[in-house]
Length: 286
Image 1 (tube, one colour):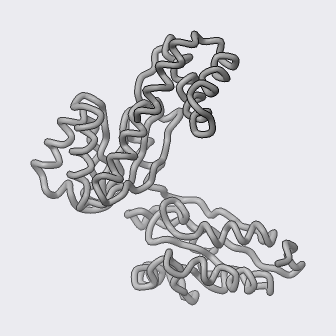
Image 2: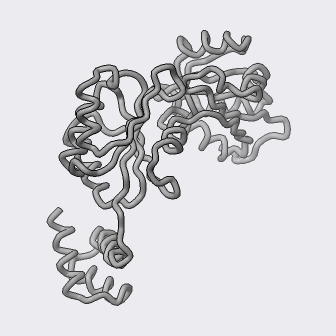
Image 3: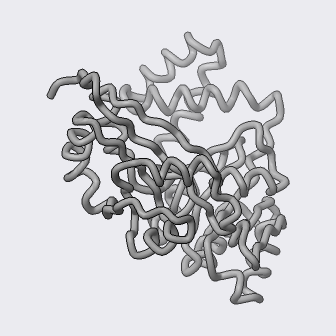
């Protein structure tokens, strides 16, 4: 495969679409979608009627998790021959827990220009109105559907100091909140941001136990598009060194026996050997 684009190659546009309110569709997005040769849509049954509301008649092709790896090469060849393509998802910004990564990665290998047409994103919209810290955050996407796998990920995030953001399917919202209460406790603050920009938008900031009760009491809160946000662990300054030592030990223990990992950690951090050794044993027990 050549990694050089031709001089007459087109472009790939990554176009954000509204997450609910059609008024959030930008004029630039409409103009771009009207002007490209082909629109790649996650679900054409949803996207074609949506596009028609903006007088966008451009041909649409299905592009989703089941075919994106298979057809990305063919699509890049079309762009190299001079066509321009636009990628949209059902709502929001493509690639954010949506299809498109294999195509964009391959486009960069071919030096095909990839252009962002920005717009609404549920992740950023929810974070901005949550009332939780926004200076640093971790986006975890969708949690696994099965409880054991879901709890494993939640437990791995117990000491995460950043605000944590999840997408969640409404049918699994109660199960996820119950797992969070079990793992993080009743008092950890959390936010449900549901149906953002739509008529029945909900943004509720509560301790986890109260948020679970709120969702249990109102079945309407178990419908629509849901973003769950969790407050990060508040880290005292005196705890910072301990957290850094633990992170270092986890990396070393993945490759070395306990004694070697501890000895190396002592040299790097200057911490007491006994303290690091006990920490290493706890990590191994996990």
